[in-house]
Image (tube, rainbow, N blue to C red; front, side, top):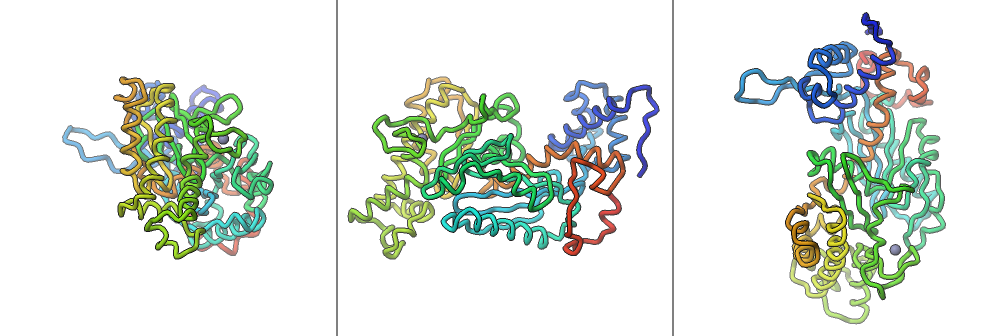
Length: 447
Ligand SMILES: [Zn+2]
């Protein structure tokens, strides 16, 4: 396809900017029609029609099937051509390494999961991660030149702008993961644009794009895992705070005399209600000789105590598991009641292993505590939901964030009609991977 030379007196840059803006709107929306785009972009329907036509001619936007409707003419939904690019989403978590490959619209075409054994040290963890990613690319059968970026979610304290893991406050990992330029390390390994983000924020983006927050411009996402964090989505975007560290919900004080936290404070929510704290409380009780079904489930090995086992025991009415979980829920509730008063959110979405395993057992006490402790009107207004995206939310959100980041490069690449990635500074060349291409090159040539 040739470059479209505009016949209007409008400067090319401005025209291209408009096309890009509409392309981004099409990418961000769920099957918007021309009419909806006109409203969103504040342009006339005829301008939108012309821009959309050019994007269709360039082959980057396609019309999809209109939804069934009883009313006359049905608006035709528009989509970015799904095989325009593929993205890798990687969630490097405390327990699992999760990898997804998605098309440009976020549909998962490949997924894999492996255990992360952080104890083996950073170097080994990264080697294993890279191997898994190379393997995912091979097994997905996606031509390598169509993979345009990698989004990485990491559960440490992240400087996303600089692409650095500042710290990883887990026992034994503090020194290993201090000031690690993880984005650069990935870029060197894969020669692709990469993005590093806090995994709670990548999950928040996944909720917004694919989960329960699709139609919301304000919501909170709370993740309870080995740490506790919050994604704050306000006015249609993630709220980051002055230094980019907003959302450290796990480090608000809920018990002045509580245990010492890795941050140096005492009584942080994380020390009392994270998965790590729950596991620790159960281990200590078992060591003390308190009777529990968990004792039988772990066959004498305290290292086997996990959230999954505690959840299983609690759902079988084990009193120790139940008590420990209710105590954790009550602390989360105290923290949440403060957040509800402060931000008056319409919706709070919970994610993390605890909520996946036993949503009702945790969500019910939370609702009760919010009612007790938050201002009545805010408490009545807030809806508490449990994420439906499962364990790969963070990887999915990371892929989505890099998709949003590369869409401009993709547009320029398309517009310049060049399929030689080296001619486009935004799309770095991929070295030495021609042998791994599996899908017919015909598909690539068509792009
Ligand atoms: Zn703390």
